[in-house]
Length: 194
Image (cartoon, rainbow, N blue to C red; front, side):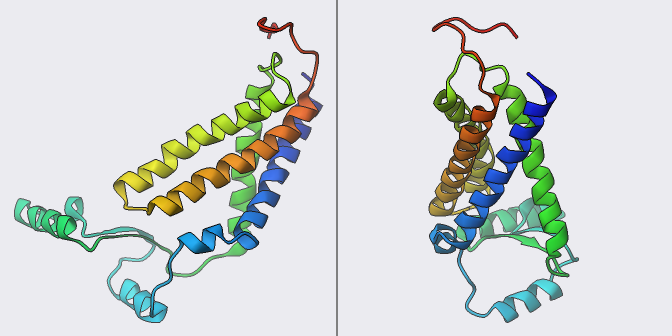
């Protein structure tokens, strides 16, 4: 497989995912439907500023963060009773240039790794390769998003949308990447030589 084809598949696959993400988050209603808004955001932000040490991930109550066995036991009791919160807090706002740069790097890296895996699937057609890519995305989503659902109380609807969204994005990318990488297929049931 030529480096040129691998590079083209990587870049176009990442572009497909980037475009899908824009459509999914900006035009489709499913993300907005699964992310709630506080009744008074200003009060919540002020409370976070006053009660945090700055940027970070916060768990309320936080039994492991408490010093002493009695305090840990009390926090665990409050956790069982509820309410609980998992907060990712960025005190100084979002810098969109940095956000997009991280997104581009993340997507290109994933597309490159998936492209390298696709080069080993010469026994599959375009649809088979796209389903292979979708399976990679599905497994990755399950590993990541079900952890948030299990340990950090992420709602089932939010978790399901995130898993479906990522799987769909990479299925579409897989179609494009597979078309670029297409080559001679091995005979049915025979793996092509690496």
